[in-house]
Length: 395
Image 1 (tube, rainbow, N blue to C red):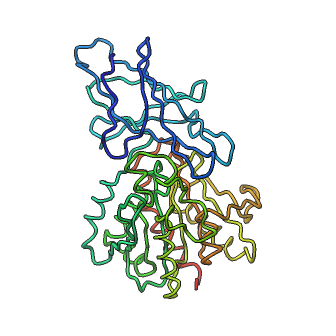
Image 2 (cartoon, rainbow, N blue to C red; image 1 turned 180 degrees about the vertical axis):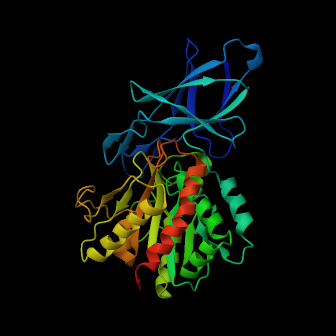
Image 3 (cartoon, helix red, strand yellow; image 1 turned 90 degrees about the vertical axis):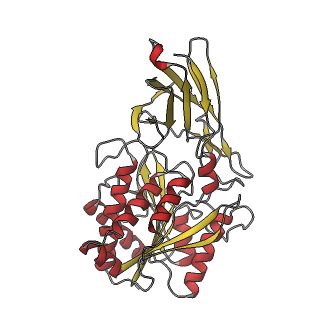
């Protein structure tokens, strides 16, 4: 089937080059985004639309695509964001998605076989969550009496950043969630959406949750990158999940400065979060535990309880990395003080961690991950937080 065009003129579309080879194969070359003052580069997000002519009149509806430029570099070392379990999500309308397997082939590339039964088809790495999806959510919940949406700063390109509070500010305990510090990772947005909708559904469970805790959410930290379809870094070449061991650079990382200012104000008011989680996607789906340099046991005990509750109340099964509360399944001695988790723990004394959501496969559900699966995890985490605070007297 002849390809007419690859269209990328919509929000969250990935920057790319493409060409059609002599045998009709479409080669799609993703464009890397780069880290400032570093050889590090990243490309792992794809989101584009295929255009064909008269598919009903064409006897061969098959189209073969080769995706390339997955030769990422992190800390000077090569790495690949794709695997033998990678998938490609497809949609005719950009809203309803299904998944196809993507075959990893030589040269660190992905091969995707498409049946074109329509003249327009969206392809994406994961089911997308866009700025417009977030705006729709915020519009839906903004008037709820238990919700406050507060502007806290702007991105490099001037997009508004907001802090969403769900619950009463005088609740005994506080949770902080941040999503989308890396633009390609939509799982955190789906989780947050599920959590918010569950907390506001006015049931006995959620009323008990709101009696115990309040949730503060940075729903989309790297809005510029999400809009432009980038992979890892903000528009000034900064990884928003690094450099948290020091104050944020106001020129290069205003997104982190916005959150840092929120935390400083909370500390001044003696109402810092008791638990903070940075939400990500990767190929493993583990909880990344910090390794405090002093007095680690209270923190590690809390993280062990958090993991146990995740296993008890949600579909999470993948385990953890870092810390040393369970040496049989964790990597003892792991430290990365620049990440959100260790930075907030060391600088603010907040029990903080990274929750990675496996982008290829949900072991606990034995299925490819869709947005609704991460929404379900967010819904289930309402009970996790309730028990986390109920079983222990935190101060």
